[in-house]
Image (cartoon, rainbow, N blue to C red; front, side, top):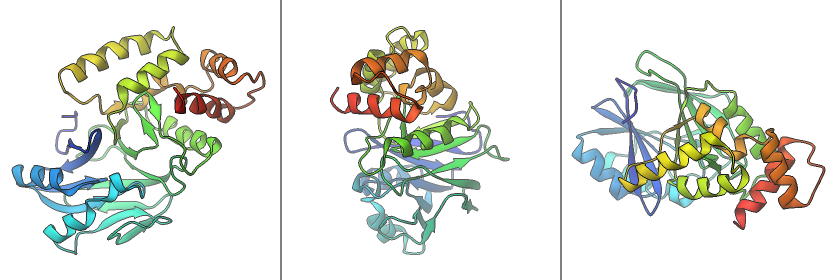
Length: 269
């Protein structure tokens, strides 16, 4: 459980390594990226929660596959929020950069960020500090992972670099709710990029201990990612040096060029 007092954010495991995030106040619940319905339905029933909305970050089936079954169970009036330029089953509200999602129950206000890279239409939801939100929260789908970033299926390294820069500008205490438990494999790669990063070495030990207890490594924070995530550290000398070595290119003039080099490395790692 995170440190928010009135709102709880709970990870519902799905498939092999997905998390469906449930934002609730003990009565009403929002689901983020319900790729399959059954684990979400079981959790809502067990906690006696009423579903009042669904938030979608991007169109991939492991993030949208449960929507229609959830609507069949709770009724077609449930609002489904999702990115404008994607086909999202059951979507009722199409969102673009700067839109606000105002939910009455559970009470939360979310700002929409367009964060292309993993997909072209990818969005994220940011809740800044509110009466019932102790720390800012980011629901970022597959754009940012703990110690990693999403594979570039549709977008470019420049787009991903710009998207991660948007996240880097958020408050450092922002809790980051990614949708996959990829942390240990991401750390293995991050250590190949920055073997001397003491924050990363400490995080590797802590993350392994969490997984050994079958606990999520999430949420992470923006501040943590700026210390350990190579894709958020493409302006750091050790990351730049590793990118030059692995790519054989001595001229990597921008963080986007560095990101392109290490993302290509990660894809074959």
